[in-house]
Image 1 (cartoon, rainbow, N blue to C red):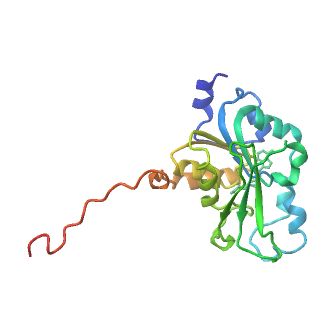
Image 2: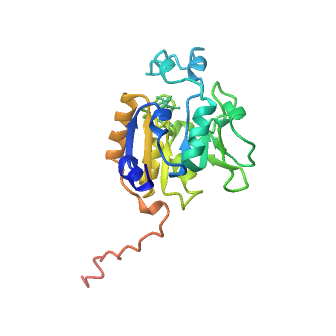
Length: 230
Ligand SMILES: C[S@@+](CC[C@H](N)C(=O)[O-])C[C@H]1O[C@@H](n2cnc3c(N)ncnc32)[C@H](O)[C@@H]1O
C-alpha cells in the first residue's frame, strides 16, 4: 500500500479493530504523530471501589484494559514520526529515554486520585511542559478514562506541522475531535464497536475552529444608534 492509497482508505476515519491488525500493512512513517492514551490496567484500580458510584461497568473493562506489549509500541513507532503517549510512565520498559514529558495537572491534591497524569514524548522539544486543567471540568464523559479535549488540543499545538494524527486506542475519539478542531487530519482505531460509534458521533458534531491558532478575524464594527445619526 502506498501513501496515496493509505490516505484514501484510512484518513479521517474511525476504524473498529485491534490496532495491531489494522496497522500491520500500513507503510512506514505514514502518519505524522501518534497522540494516544492506551490501556494500562485501570480495572485493578477500580476494583478497589473508588469509582463504585460511577455509571460504568468496570467488569467490562477487562476486555479492553489489557496491558500494552512491545509489539504495540514497535508498530506505533514504525508508522509514525513522533509520539505522545499518555500513561507512558506505566510501561517505560517498552519505551526509550526522553527528556520530554507532558504533565496534566488535574488541580487535585492528595485525594484518592492522581494529582497529575504524565505523557511520554518522543522528544521533539527538550522541555517538560505542564497543562493546568481542573479535572472537574472534564465531566459529561462517554468513556471511563476520557481525556479532556483542551488537553489534546494543547498537545497538538506543540507540533503545528503534524497533519495526520493517529490515535490507535481512540476510545470516545477525543484525540480525533481535537485534531478536527485544529483543521488536522485524523485516524482513530478502537477495538470496541460501542466506543467507535461514540467517536463517530462526536466527530459529526465537531467543527474546525480556526480561532484556536489563527489570528482572530477582525469583526466589522456594528453600527450603533448614533452611527445612524439618529
Ligand atoms: C484509555 S482508553 C482511551 C480513552 C480516550 N483517550 C478517550 O478520551 O476517550 C483506551 C482504549 O483502547 C481501546 N483498546 C484496547 N485494546 C485495544 C487494541 N488492541 N486495539 C485498539 N483499541 C484498543 C479500548 O477499547 C479503550 O477504549
